[in-house]
Amino acid sequence: MKKMISTILKTVVFFIGWAILISFTPDLQTKKQALLRLWWEFTPLAVVILFSIIFVLVIEKGKVQVSIGSRFFRNSLTGVVIGVLWLGSVVAVLLLTKTMSLQGQNNIDHIWIWILALLLNVAMQELLVRGYLYQLWKQKYNVVVATVLTTIIHCDARWSI
Image (cartoon, rainbow, N blue to C red):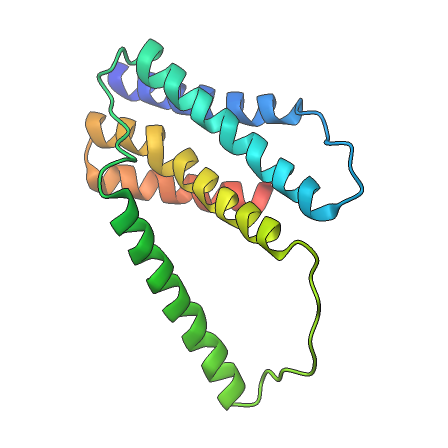
């Protein structure tokens, strides 16, 4: 029971501490929406990295490892390919069934900044729930428990943010 309470407490402190800290992030003073979005995606990522380092090194004293470097490029490429295939198949079905149609072209200023902001958001979400928290629950219990709990947290966090 002590292990369960300790693990739940660490999870709550990590997640709520992260949320509180990002709420104090000052806004970037710019009129460019792309740069503002990049800032809004960068700061939560920086805070989750900071929290992960603090929790892994100070709280856990290195007993929990977050291995984001192992096969990073291979895993990233696999994720991009699967994501493109997944979204591409949905768009193809929508186009073929005439549920969706393309009716023009929008010119988006600073498209690469928007794409970078999107990638930072994905990295932040994955590191937030699949980094320290996942590894903590996996070490204390097992892969199934870690997967189920971090998926619940991830779904809840996406709806509340």
